[in-house]
Length: 329
Image 1 (cartoon, rainbow, N blue to C red):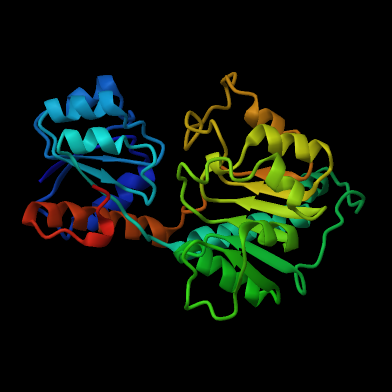
Image 2 (image 1 turned 90 degrees about the horizontal axis):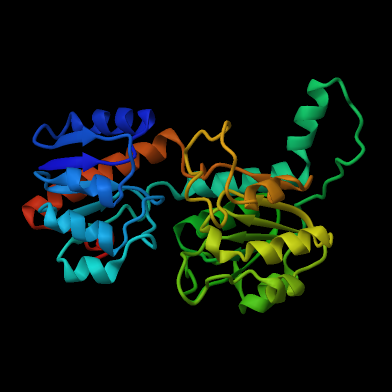
């Protein structure tokens, strides 16, 4: 099995090479460039390509892969909304993913964002470095005794619900398919969760139905001074409506590990660039907003699980014994 690995970062290479020692029959060539129509042609002679959540895998790119003889697309992530599945099916390209590499990693980062933006840790860190020990502008709230609203209670949402319970919070949730293992969670309709929660954390996949589920109408239903956290998909939130609401002092704090129009920024150092979009600049202009770099998954345990499962998917494909949970198409 020969795999061409796109958008390889040093930590990707380290993690995959550690796991590959157990699979000497798998060959991996690492490219720093991400996949595109131009770079997809480089996959000629390879059995599979490996891409990430920020890779653009539209019909044109997939056609180039098919023309190069590639029959397997390995997504080293859980999400696949960036893949044109209709085109992949027509081109007979199998798409496999890593559905649950470390739900705790993402949930812990979600709570870290909530705690940091609540207690203004990002502001205080800078102030103290300048010998400013004033407490003005740093007032937080106790999460203990308040209500956490979890939108989506799959593996990550369930992990977040357990963390919130550990903080002494009442936990309510919305999910089309309630998680019966979460006996302490009260399930409600989405509008009820939004209107009753002090902390709202998004943990659902991006679908046509929930695109911009957080918009001016749903924000209007939220409590005044709520904390909103998104570690799922940026397009779940209408950024213009969110910014307008922040300007109107709706939220106590907002923590975002994902946001709309992030594709060109994900995992890249752009400190010397003039950013084409004003989304990031506008969000970072608010003192009660924290934006992180799509890093919720980024732990040693998660990277190891991603590498291990991706290589296992490649072997299963070659052996004709696919894990049904990992199949996208």
